[in-house]
Amino acid sequence: MASAGGAPDSGRKPALTGIRTVAAATVCLTHAAFWTGHYTDDYAGRLFARFEVGVTIFFVLSGYLLFSPWVRSLRAESSVYPPLRRYAWHRVRRIMPAYVMTVGAVYVIFVFRTDSSDLGHGMSGLIRNLTLTQVYGFGHLHTGLTQMWSLAAEVVYYVALPVIAWPLARYVCRGRWRPDLLIVVLGGLLLVSPVWTFATHGDGVDPTARLWAPAFASWFVAGMLLAVLGRLIRSWPATPSVAVAAGAFVLSAGAFAGEATIVPNDAGAAVAKHTLYAVVAVGLIGPLVVGSSDWWSRLCRSRPMVWLGEISYEFFLVHVMVLELVMDLLGYRVFTGSVLFAFVVTSAISVPIAWVLHRATSPLWR
Image (cartoon, rainbow, N blue to C red):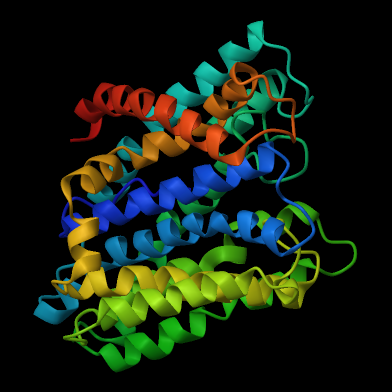
């Protein structure tokens, strides 16, 4: 899922916008690999599937950006925290206009296009998708919108953030800058996802619960921890950090981390995979948070990366529907074709559409 950006006072650095380009590209690549039949039961197939780690990058980045204003308030010891009404209104304005337009467009497309799936159809399916409740129960993920499961999870984090942050600031830290307490409490919250994963892999549990927000909450919390650590660490060398991230990514394709799917059937494998994803995301974002002036920061804050990062949310919204159409354009049957061609053509078409959608909706939230 492409995070739609932080709160207006989040103090974003250009490099943190540029990293969104990496995340959006990997998400598009993994979907191209799936559509062209490259999610095979071997190392190469699992590696293609693991490019979904872009979702983790977005979640960690959201946690960092949205918790940073609270960290700044605590460091100032002003007892003045981000206003809830402003925060909520900004989230709604940034997320929903482009999302509603995309959902509406997809449903209109399938008035004229035959859908090979019968999921998410009818008025109930439309309402589910418009309200981001399509992940609660089986049968509501509409073709062209299947990637929205991650956005459905992320909006839960948006709601949960003030619920967690205010007691942390008011009662745990008592309005003072206490990074030690923040690290301890947030470190404990990292356990939410493993506990949830083991709980939802039991018999008789709704399998869609594996895609609900608690399953991936540790990624968002990792971003919140970065917001604290970024105030304590003066240097975060990019080269070793990116190398560790690359190593964790390569390792995640091992059979021990499960099959080529979002949540492996084995709970232990799912926890291992999600933990490695967190290492990847923190390794890539950490140096940018600290603000090191190195090759990685320069790359991510370059003008093309920042420009593409600015429209990454809209790119995320449209690229799966575009990919559906590109498969026809290239003459590919489902689960056949070239990953590279599908990825390149989908990206080339999705970027201008995303730019138009971004420009059309930006007056509503800027």
